[in-house]
Image (tube, rainbow, N blue to C red):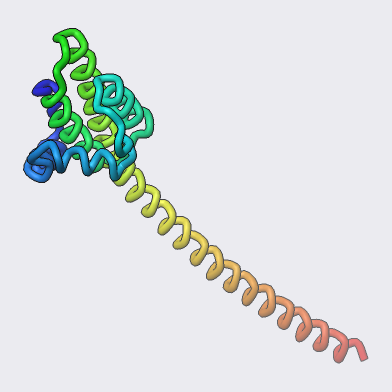
Length: 162
């Protein structure tokens, strides 16, 4: 499964950490069972591994869990006797899952950038609302002042007419 190593820097660190964490088959099985990717008491077969990998790929599990599970699957696969073609299929599923993970990983960075930009837009909109409220107060003040001047002018005009 060497070709399934992630390509982005952040993923490389996470993958290395997962390899250190999942350092034997027992831990690998425990993790896969805890994530319900392999059922307890189930015979470990290539079909079980394939189904678990496909499930992992389809559900787009969070990155770190995906990496740990891929490492765990690779540990378990190493203990199963299988022919080269079947092994290659499993490696391809792992590789495609890692490609999907890398896309998700890059997507997170893009989403964070977009979130920052959106926060900026929200702040700008709030400033606009504050400016509009101030403008509204100023206009209201001018209207009240104008009405007061009109009332005063009418009062003076009425006084002069009488």
